[in-house]
Length: 236
Ligand SMILES: C[S@@+](CC[C@H](N)C(=O)[O-])C[C@H]1O[C@@H](n2cnc3c(N)ncnc32)[C@H](O)[C@@H]1O
Image 1 (cartoon, helix red, strand yellow):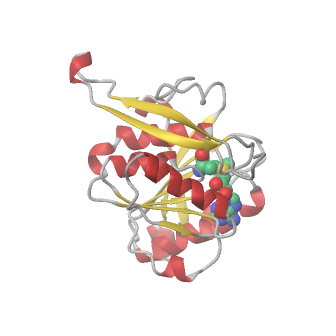
Image 2 (spheres, protein in one colour):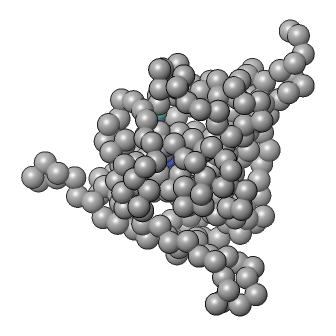
């Protein structure tokens, strides 16, 4: 940053089909993600992002008719993979972090998906940009549960989107950093429920994924959060 401009490096991720009947028939997706060489949240790909991107790649066939919003996208690996798998994608990061929003734009340009909208969306804030969103089918959040003070704000944003589409799903990966952190009470409070998705189901139980060693020994978990219809429709 000596001349005031961020130093940007580009990392490549290659997602491949594990089940094709021969190497030559296997589908593959190559995406390149520019990362700012600066150790801050939202400036580079986090291990959780590679796992969530692998989940999207594994389910790529169902993405083409879906509208997908990534929250806290940072450099947006999952969102870029979803867009490359033909989902209609919107990327977002905090409205107060213009450098992260710039990273979202940079990742889109790098992968020839410059038409993907990027918006400022701060968790817990009901902003005009949030109100203007179309009906969202899938919300993506990779490593957004890292500061317990933000957990409820994230879920409030997700819940707001689920009010508009009761079948929306929140696909999220998180890194186990403390055994004391939990979102269970908050899910109960906001009439939501979650399902743990074992990584082995989508071939993500590996230290190296998509040609990247990022998952390494980090303990990453994948959850699908949905509205608890029964609880939501029961009068208090
Ligand atoms: C640990 S980083 C994860 C980035 C990216 N999802 C990944 O996994 O590579 C957390 C992200 O959340 C964003 N963020 C932090 N606070 C936020 C808030 N209040 N509202 C929206 N985004 C926020 C940060 O800017 C950052 O991009």
